[in-house]
Length: 356
Image 1 (tube, rainbow, N blue to C red):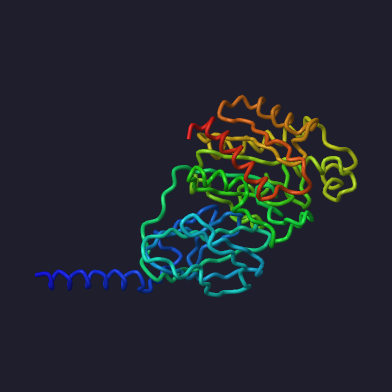
Image 2 (image 1 turned 90 degrees about the vertical axis):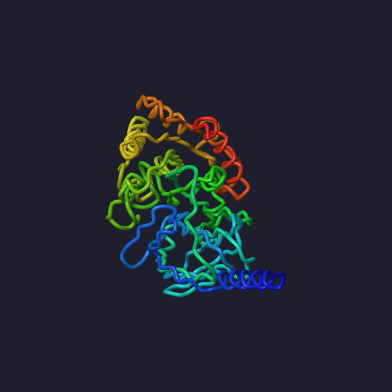
């Protein structure tokens, strides 16, 4: 009897070991894959372009590979295993299979392939996975948040510790952005529509957030179906670039939009108000936080928080709040540490207003 029992135990252990190491090919359209962010799925692939766009799976096994096709070879991804960053990968241009993780202890794990660079560094097409083990049911999230922001929300230069504030792909880490710090605290599914240099009335380039907020991909005209993702909370952190550009009479975009005369406060307030109205029309039941900071648009004496307050007061909507991050009073974009401070600040505000 004991011998028979031992044989059963050995058989079960052998089956478990074999099951966790058997190769499982998973196509991009498998319903057990969770796509985070505005990630369109076509007949042949899933497209990741926006900051924080992610492929998230749960699996029982020891290793995972992914087949990806990167547009420019400039994108960086965090491989997050069991809520810890296990690897940072720069993708090569073209289609290739990548080892995301290997050597894990047999058993259940969660893996997230997180796009830490913004859309101008290129799109990535995801084809599928090769798992040493078995795919499990997709993860669940307690809440849904959507962000609209600029370089601060993107995490631009947050990892540049030299003080040069370099805005290239190497130092941009959207995972460390305040937006994703707060989202992880609340175990929230997140969508992040952000672009360095963008504004509401004027940008450093020839389009503004109201032009692209409803796009599947920012440089395309295809409209996003807002029914695919309905957040409980929307956070807007814009106006930092406007604050620099609306008086920069020599800038090309200023001349194009305003001629020789800076826009009036009434014009600025009206444009912001119209943008928030458009978001409210998409999400009638969501709470909306109109934020600003933590760069010099919120320093003492800045008129920009007041513009936001006046715009929101005019909407007479009890589901819309304002929240201003304290001016960080250091050079350049927020560092990882400063992003964490912002994330903690926003978390406290959300707790108070949303009762999460």
